[in-house]
Image (cartoon, rainbow, N blue to C red; front, top):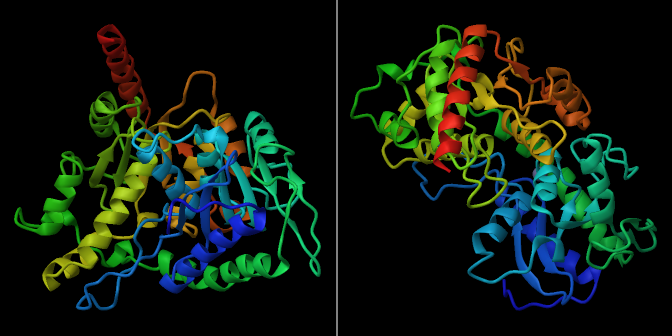
Length: 429
Ligand SMILES: [Zn+2]
């Protein structure tokens, strides 16, 4: 679309977002779209849609493998676009802009929008996964400071007759605050999403062999493209193995600390497959975008790697990928540090995890989302309360239940190495 477009009303701005939702629907992914508008001028900076499922151009890959990026929601894509282009295009600060979205943001996108500092304007409600799931504009899922921030920077547009909904939200903050949108456009944003959601949900959670029939990727030859892709993703790949993937031990301390020491923010996340193999250990790229944290990077990178290999030109590579790389809900995520549970990053992380696994994991204990350490001043109870307060999708469907790793030796080893690495880091700085 032309980036020179100027909007003059909530209706015009939402029409652009709704058009993106239509494109998403045609692509067969979650039908959600959005755009970024400059508050002062009504100028449209960019419009994008959900891209969780994406077709491949390789027709030989049959059945088609379409799960591309579980975090590629419209809002998350808009935020990363903004930070990628902010300097080059001399874009205004995020608090002078509004992200307009056809659907109430999920926990991941709500956390990301608050972390990035955008104003937000919303059309349709989402009573299952939306951060305003109860429709009360009190955001019970958010930590108190984030709740206040959302109440002063977010708004839900009024809807014209015959639906007649009042505007709810901040008086200034969101562009076109207080305005109404056409009932027809509003209904489109709502019904498009409802039609897409079950179809897409089933496809994005049904794309991996269960552990009982999976083959250990350690048996792959050095020439295997699957092995090479894993090594390219993370030099630690397939070099460390835990006896029990849900109860990893001190063997994970070194990869986590090494990767955290080289990352922009001192953190790292390890992904273990059902055999206990360390598939990847990655840090964040917050220097590119504040929402590109270690967890976001690893879940996106693993999904992108699977999408590429499952749609590869060579049939052997496609079959090796299917046989050795399963859906992340059968894997275990081990975070070196869980983010501060009073901040927006914690909400984003739990939300991104929910979008990654899509349904309960089996076995659910110990959880497949674990952390080794907590930031100073926060407790396991704070983390558990945050998870339990999330919208119904996360508590009923996915049953998000982050826990600390059970192996005390891993906690001690990571703490000791972390203290040392951060002392060295601060001495360097
Ligand atoms: Zn989202």
